[in-house]
Image (cartoon, rainbow, N blue to C red; front, side, top):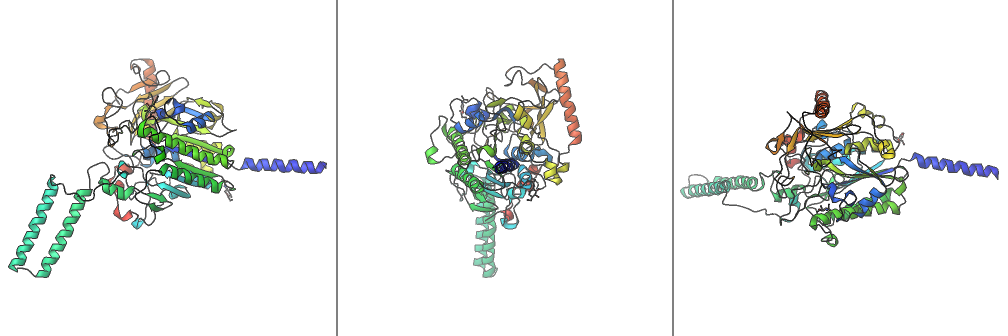
Amino acid sequence: MERAWVWVVGVVVLLAAAAQAKPPNIIVFLADDLGIGDVGCYGNTTINTPNIDKLAAEGVKLTHHLAAAPFCTPSRAAMLTGRYAARYGLVGQEHRMPVILHLASLASLPVHEVTLASALQAANYTTSIIGKWHLGMHCGWLGRSCPGPLSHGFESFFGIPVTLFQEFRGSHPFWKFPLDETKFQGLLMTWVVTMLSLLVAVKKKTVRMSLVVAGALLTNLLLALVWFVFAHYSKNSECVSPWLHQRLNSMVMRDDKVVEAPMELDGFSQRLAQESRQFIASHANDDRPFFLFHSFAHVHTPMFSAPQRAGVSKHGRYGDNVEELDESMGVVLQALKEYGLEDNTLIYFTSDQGGHLEAVDSDGQRIGGHNGRFKGGKAQGGSEGAIRVPGIFKWPGHLPKGVTLDTPTSLMDLLPTVLSLAGLPSLSKIVPEAAQTELDGEDISELLVTGKGRKGPRFFIHHCSQAINALRLVTGSHVYKMYLAKHKWHPGSTQCGWGYNTACKCYGEFVDDMSHQPELWDLNTDPYEDGKPIDPHTVEYKEAVGKMQEYLKQWRGRVVYPPSQLSTVSKIMWRPWLQPY
Ligand SMILES: *[C@@H]1O[C@H](CO)[C@@H](O)[C@H](O)[C@H]1NC(C)=O
Ligand SMILES: *[C@@H]1O[C@H](CO)[C@@H](O)[C@H](O)[C@H]1NC(C)=O
């Protein structure tokens, strides 16, 4: 009898040890362009985000959580790698787009960069991304395969390869011949003159008939080509007409293949949620833990909702999209609960950057987010509204419940923090190739668990593409922010105009250059920068700015940025021979 008890206890202990040994599942929810002021638990009283609010109530809510860039591509890259995107050139440069534009183009997250997914894959996790990628597709010849996320540690992918564009909505004309434009007038004249000359040649019998026919065919072909370029090459930021854009980039992919083109927008949020549910269902009983990256297509423009979700919120189409995002998150979390995985799953929720203040729909309705009292929004370099985003961690039994922390943290902290919380070896142990890789993110697991962070100062760099627009220095009692360049806003606002294609630029005539006498704020005493910056004649200014300038000098001496990929036309342009068909 006694021996049986010993045996039972032994088995129980072993089982407990085994349960302990399996690292937690990990789910990362990433919203697109969601502002910190768009979420209930961050102070919005009129929007309905019960699932995000519940996550915060059951986990740790970060109120000073910072995106590493004010645009999708570099911010997402930085989150997944724990490193500023400028370190591997996945940033723009003045006067070029700051993000990847075409599926069939060369710009991409370099394959040798280690991502959270590749680290977890090396640690025996099953990995999947469901939703938006936007970090380059690495397409092969004739687009036979576009592995994209599969080259970065994800075993499976379902979602959109680039991003949503306003052009994906509606239908756009293919035929156009606007005769008020000189280039089309020229084209018409050329055609008429060539055809007339050919006719004359036929009448006078100066050349053989077969030559005339060949000439006519050739001219028409050439002119048709010229017409296509005139009609569908465009000087807009994407370089292609809306019609062509929709053909080239509006698609849904599964793994490395296109499964739907053009994509069906309405109901897409629910389809992503169902995919994630299915993923959870099929890996619930695996021996291996899973990593699911649920990367929402919402709340980027264009706005779309399933019919039953349209008109539900108090805030128009934008509010509907926020609430639909929240609902989708609820569906995925419900699956975790159903399969009994809640306690052994670490969840993280954030947004890749602040709300897009300028966005309005074709009918004038506002379709961009709200950044609370923080100034500025998406695309504005170091403006607080561009980079201050929601951030929530939850892991029952391991992280405290309902705690709010105002220590500054970064999306780049995700990778080292997840490895540490999950009890995995350090990055250089899991991925030996990463031994020389310097991370910009930090392990904040101790902060999350105990509420107490590191002792020494911490610096954050706020890039505008390759340039540095601001710096942040966190000391024991201050959070200093130093602007080297600051936006010129429209009077009475913190934005740069209106229109669905309007986004602020963060260089040249769009900003005030302050590098000679930087503006300094203490966000601990003036979090919304409502008052006046710190007087440059004070000791405090000299000390804080001195420290940050010194840091910057060392940084620039130590870290060499490679050429910007997104400023090279050859890398961002559409490459017909890489397009999947
Ligand atoms: C809540 O969010 C909506 C949508 O962005 C916004 O229009 C509204 O002003 C916000 N309300 C509050 C109280 O912050
Ligand atoms: C992954 O699994 C392999 C074989 O099952 C094992 O040798 C290796 O140690 C595991 N790696 C980690 C990080 O657990």
